Amino acid sequence: SALYKVDGWGAPYFAVNSSGNVTVRPHGSSTMDHQEIDLLKVVKKATDSKSVGGLDLKLPLIIRFPDVLKNRLECLQTAFNYAVKSLSYTSHYQGVYPVKCNQDRFLVEDIVKFGSSFRFGLEAGSKPELLLAMSCLCKGASESLLICNGFKDAEYISLALIARKLSLNTVIVLEQEEELDSVIDISLKLGVRPVIGVRAKLRTKHSGHFGSTSGEKGKFGLTTTQIVRVVKKLYQCGMLDCFQLLHFHIGSQIPSTALLADGVGEAAQIYCELVRLGANMKVIDIGGGLGIDYDGSKSANSDVSVAYGLEEYAMAVVQAVKFVCDRNSVKHPVICSESGRALVSHHSVLIFEAVSSSKYKVPTMSSFDIQHFIEQLPEDAHSDYNNLSESAIRGDYEACLAYADQLKQRCVEKFKDGSLDIEQLAATDGLCDLVAKEIGVSNPVSTYHVNLSVFTSIPDFWGIEQVFPILPIHRLDERPTKRGILSDLTCDSDGKIDKFIGGESSLPLHELEGESGMKYYLGMFLGGAYQEALGGVHNLFGGPSVVRVSQSDGPFGFAVTRAVPGPSCSDVLRSMQHEPEIMFQTLKHRIEEFVHDEGDMGGAMIAGGIAQSFHNMPYLTVGSSCCLTAAN
Ligand code: PLP
Image 1: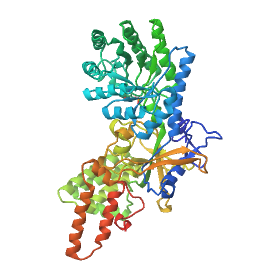
Image 2: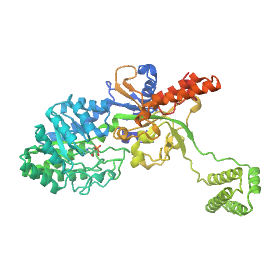
Image 3: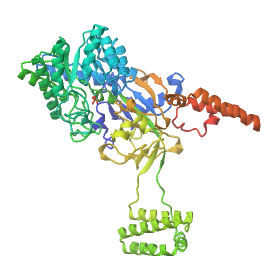
């Protein structure tokens, strides 16, 4: 576990047991009541059709732990409750979950259910997100906030106002000044008194990758001049009492509590000024940004780590708001946050399989082979070879590599002009690789092929080079003997993972035991936020299968409470407007023509095989050599 820094990024939820398997403590601790769950056992159970109602679940697989989610939510609330109490803050904390982070139905429903006792709400950034938030919050607490962010047209604003009419605690947060006229007009037409918030563009700037949303030139929010104009317009319309919330978001992964306190303090000062101008202020919404320590380094100087925990975060926020409000003699507002990453990252684990590994094998060459090779070389390449062998005898390895390179380039030119044949070119490559190996500069890193699409399942690695903890979920009692990078199934050179936590460019991995039939499972952790929401269908690989696992009293200590196979080839084809049924009929018709012209050649079997391929997931069917025979 030390090799993969599990204690650093995984505590208190992930650990390694004495059998060398990764375990999950969904409640953040293991007690008599809460045993650890062995991830390998979950994978075995989920892929055993008898255990999941006859479903044939294939990898890649997302395992969701609702108990982890509940624990994260409760820890966040507890951290704020503690800060409120210990600092004698006279209002309370009431968070919302930004659904953009992961819109999975069951995840959002769980958050509303687990958070209803402390009025936890939702944030939406688009019309479909608003629709889902509206319907979910009908089952939540009536005071839970429904924050409407994002660019808004008349339809979005109408929906948000209808939500208010339905007694949902909806706040329309102006992202652009122009939205105000529509809100005023539509609310008058619908006869609904809106609750309005404003997203402020703060001067405090977060300099990390995720900070481009912040600062005066940031993409979102209203400048101070615009906020003052909003106040004036609302006053003129007799609607200043509707202005109740101030929001800001300085970016995800806020690196330190010092920066956080600076931003919150600036926003609190704007809040107090709005109170002075007569707005009916009630809530300060500090946006997202509560970070995750992906590499366990607790560092404030990295995009993948943060130097604080939930408690320090809550304390810094409450302290900053209280200080500014007390200075201005303003009543303490309700503090709302829109933490996404920090709530949902831990709750799911992506499991995938390494199906093969390849390391370039340096060819062996006997002295006879080398002699033969030299005789075949074109005249002008002889001098390169002689220089190469003389520098080898002298022990001048740098010159050796330079002459090997020169020899190689000359032979490539000769091959291109047709004067060197392919065997001679291969022998040149072999000799140069041999030289590199002897000198010790050949690359010892293997490529492990994984049954996964990076574009679908880890899009942030491809898009912004965000690293996540990745490690085998078993055999951790055995020292890995190799180092590898991971290459995915897509035919795209970006479809590989060659950067890992701790700044590593390869991962310690075990030798695959292909012959013994033992599979090699890897897990990607802390990917519950954004990855599912952003993943695409490059090469038409769809999402993974999903299971939901809860702790239970049974012999394994867990139960699979929901299992959903990943999208089939038909499903992903349909997502690009193809019509699998018509495609199949076309192919069937072609088979019938062949059977007619050339006699029976197993037409039914071929049609069955094609039908099966439409039905299967697009990932490799590991262990099956040909799906056409499998279909029979
Ligand atoms: N709120 C807003 C307005 C955002 O833009 C975001 C994401 O960037 C969030 C909340 C969630 O941020 P995080 O996942 O860092 O908590």
